[in-house]
Image (tube, rainbow over all chains, first blue to last red; front, side, top):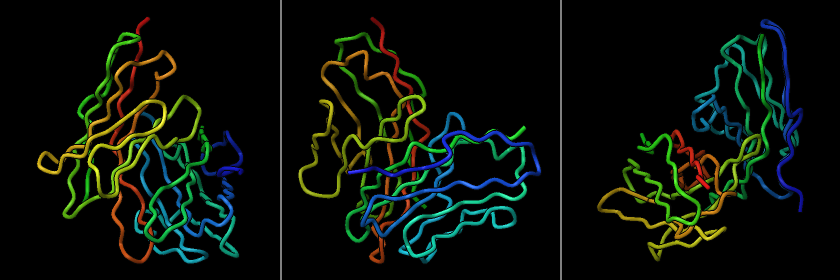
Length: 114
Length: 116
């Protein structure tokens, strides 16, 4: 069974440019998460989806970040415009949801903003 | 709000020696607890989890962890480490809200170095 797929794996952009990350969760997983991992830190939740509904986006900086999960499967996280401080790894995870909180993580997208 | 503390930023262990990584959590109810491992350039892999029941849980790769409610701890152990265990280890806590599976709160991680 395929795991969580993310692309691209690496992205280098100049500040003020837009960037988008894509995530394909494990088949059948209704819950999808985006996490931000700064260097030397643990992941921090940005947004959680239950199917196509964003049920927890309290930590998402909405002035420049946006996310969508059309049809409740794939998801895209966008930053526009990117800032130097956005350089980090963006992790996507999925879970069955309900009483099972086991989350499966993708390999992440490492963003470098110059 | 829940929080996770991993007191040791770096730990160095000789190959074949035993290992214990510390994790303390703060949460108002019984938490769901997890240990993840992250190798360079890789995503997080689940080592083990505690939801309820037996407080000593077994995981993959020979790891185990013990939930101690009185100490708010969930320490990870391995009796004999291998060079391939060198990685970053994260402890995480996750509540169940009843309406779905909430996001996890992670500690800052412990970097494990294995000496030959």
